[in-house]
Length: 239
Image 1 (cartoon, helix red, strand yellow):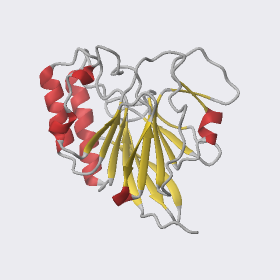
Image 2: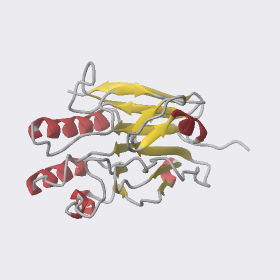
Image 3: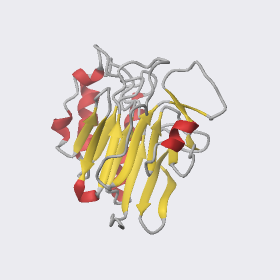
Image 4: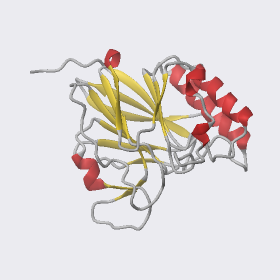
């Protein structure tokens, strides 16, 4: 039986690092650039895959400015934690009230993994809350596609390794794991550069940081999920 899913566009970013001690103004400009790109490209949803904040020391004024930027978006905005803003006892997220930005903002914080189902977009988004960035943490462990025949998207903040490689790094994501996910798109975070690490038909990309050049220029990913033409990813430069 064929499944009718609409064409949707996702704006994918990560590693915004609001409150960076070295250049906080540049980091806020990066978030502003993401919001502008989402509005300009008429994205149907926004994905922020970890390290929205740089640490638990972020000032209250910077948290408020972040919520004000997120409030400019009206489409579903899905956020998960990274290694800089993980969900440990002293987490920055103890001080962040996403509802103040609007009910379109969704924070996926379950350490066992959880789906957010957006029926109006025929979209299911899954992520595991990152409590502690260590070698035992496996960002995509436990994922299974949602039972609804929606577009299936996974968010994961971690360190990619090719199938033949081994590493002692924390929060590893192996290429073999990617190829076995069965989702339409794996939205990655942690590496501050644009990179395609797709495997076995699963589109998997890092977007680069919105406030760092990442080899050429600050960027985000515009992801198009199209039932007729599949998944396409375009790197969007941010002003």
